[in-house]
Image (cartoon, rainbow, N blue to C red; front, side, top):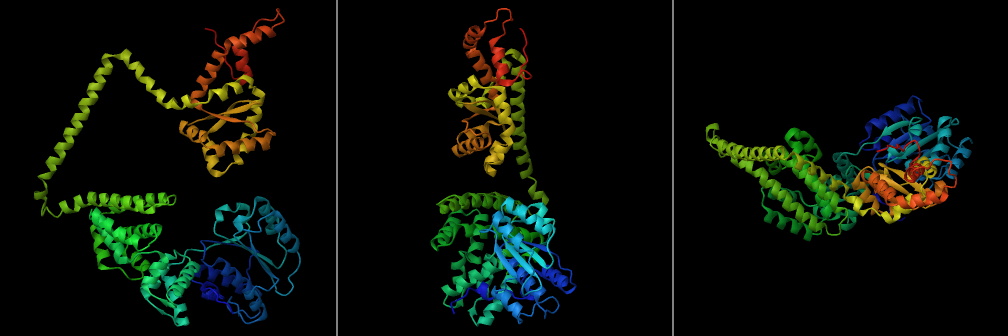
Amino acid sequence: MAYQALYRVWRPQRFEDMIGQEVITRTLKNAITTNQISHAYLFAGPRGTGKTSAAKIFAKAINCHHQTDGEPCNECETCKAITAGTLNDVIEIDAASNNGVEEIRDIRDKVKYAPTVADYKVYIIDEVHMLSTGAFNALLKTLEEPPANVIFILATTEPHKIPATIISRTQRFDFKRIAASDSYNRMIYILDQKGVIYDEQAVKVIAKAAEGGMRDALSILDQALSFGDNEITLDNALLVTGSVTHELLATYVQQVLGGDTKAALATLQSVLEAGKDAERFTEDLISYARDLLLYQQAPQLVEEAEMGSVSDDFQQLAKQTPAQTMYAMINELNAIQQQMRFTTHPDVYLEILTIKLAEIGRQKGATPTAAPAAPNAAAATPSAPAASSSALTALQHEVDQLKSTVKQLEQTPVAAKPAAKPRVTKKAPAKEVNLAKIYPVLGAATREKLNQLQEVWPDVLDSLSITQRAVMKVSQPVAAADSGVIVAFDYAFLYQRATSDHELTDALENGLDRMIGTALPVVFVPKEDWPVIRKNYLTAHKDELQNNHAGDAEQPAKPAANPVVTKAEELFGKDVVDVKND
């Protein structure tokens, strides 16, 4: 028989085999023994935490005639068929590839038929959040009024994407991440059963690298076994996971906290030359900094997470490092980690990170070194007047400058008015507005067209991606014609971003094409510049509007109307335009 991965061979077949989900397994077992079985369940939680395994065990237990205390016997024909995946009454569906309305309608049509062999027909829908809106609507009626002897088990890693109407018709169980100690114990058990030679520290490294997923832990263990020729060593585990040794990590942190940039860069270089993963190294640093911070408040939490392997150097470092320094380090690490996802040169970011962390360490070092130097309060007092004196001098200088500025303003009240003109800097984007595209739209714009656009605008925005909707959320059409639409932005920086985003423009035009049957060109303007642009257009085209009006005026009995006012009313509606005679 072909080789099977560890996570397949050692997949739990009983509730008691499941790791780290005691509350859920106990609840499900009690429901089976008391015959309080619901018609629908929702299993939510991170990947590799046992959601699908629990669903299959539950399907076996409710259909097993020899179950004991809610546990399946795994010996009868029904249990064996479910384990092998050959029982027609237990249907497992991958919603990622079967997410359409047709697939759910097929389930709805077949669900009315009674089970052929088992007592219950069980539908296990994995990654249910991938279903389309139509598919959810098709599933909703079945969940609301399910046939007898039918049970739905929905599994997902992203429950927030499931409609509330679906969730409200299920019993929800939230699977939690598996503790590193539980993963470690399970792997030790498997290795002992296989008779494999292993290093306990290596297994701990794998358990922590799995980040709460039992399947991930077994996959990494499988890889380490293959790499080490059926032997688990610490070096092999570090190579497979991309992690660094705890000692090397501690050395690096001590160097940056001590402000020794040169030594820290040398340590970083050795880490990179060893082929360690840059993102994994950053993740390890964040975990190490977090552990230092936690150890100051709750040492037992760190000891449990590290499975008892807390070194003396770590304890000493936790005592010496102020919490504020750890906050600053974690913030810097998190920022670098976000930036590294989009670069092909992570080593450069790590070098910059090292320099920044060493700077934080030097700032920290000024306080602890100064404190021991003063054996008593009297010895520390001489430095206080110097510090307070320099601070007072700086403050006095700022006060003098402010007084001088106020005095100048009081003496020249008229000259102060132009100071308001710097507001023009906020309107800098108006210089970049494409008037060549705006003016033709204004020339043919009508209020009726604008009303039509404003009605469908929310639907157009709904058709955009989440990122695009966030940009367009504070925008609205302000003028429209058959030749285009002008959209104003409340904030200039969003206008700048939208102007340079060609994909956004294409998406808007495609959305308009679907809504009104015409892909109108879209032009953007800042909202604060729109009144000026509008006024300038009417002023610049005043003669043209008067000439057009004169050519059309064939009824002398009718009082002549102001052509600028007439055009403004065409653009924006009579209810908006307010005419004031000078």
